[in-house]
Amino acid sequence: MDTASMSETVEAVRDAVISDRFTQHVVVNVAKLVNMRKDAELNESVRCCDIINIDGMGIVLGARFLGYEIPERVAGIDLFHELLAMSEHEGFSVFLLGAKQDVVEATVVKSQALFPNLRIAGYHHGYFWEDEASVVDKIRASGAKLLFVAITSPNKENFINRWRDKLGVIFVMGVGGTFDVVSGKVNRAPYWMQRHGLEWLYRVIQEPSRMWKRYLITNTIFSWTLIVERLRSVNIRSKSSPKSKQP
Image (cartoon, rainbow, N blue to C red; front, side):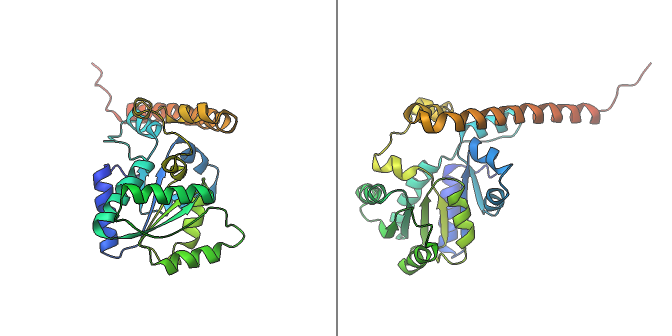
């Protein structure tokens, strides 16, 4: 995982697009990291990415618990807005893929309102699994430089990795439920909950029947994994430290 800040990540993407250097991006949170341990295809799709940002505050806190220096969280939705602003400034065209038709259309309208000079080359809903190739053709024909894929995991990661060489874009990023928030379909957690790593709890409150089991299981597995890793590292350090001389 990359420990780059938000500004460093945006600059890296800008440089990649200007240099015409294909860049595959992904953000990771607790649920995705846990699922990678049992889903080989998802694991491969994430590890193939050129930039792996830490989205979930749980990952930030967990990494710090293990002694790693993580300057800040780079949330996918915040990065999405930063990259749209950068694209407007640089004149890069973008393609929005994912969510339901009304949601992606609302996202286009909201994005254009926020960034009036942004060039939106095209958009398409996220329910196209019976004819992926035609959607890939549409993206490539649009001439977009950046592609944002708002589909749930692991479908978006695997789709991007499966078609990366035929998308015709320079930068591609999975943005999960970002379109739902941008369009106004769902609300984002208050800032204080974001800062303290409680966005998952806010999502559970909004969609309890769909989310409670997912977060209960993945958060429990992640917490246990952290404890085991911490104990293992402490044990390794104790064995490698020089023994004091006996009198």
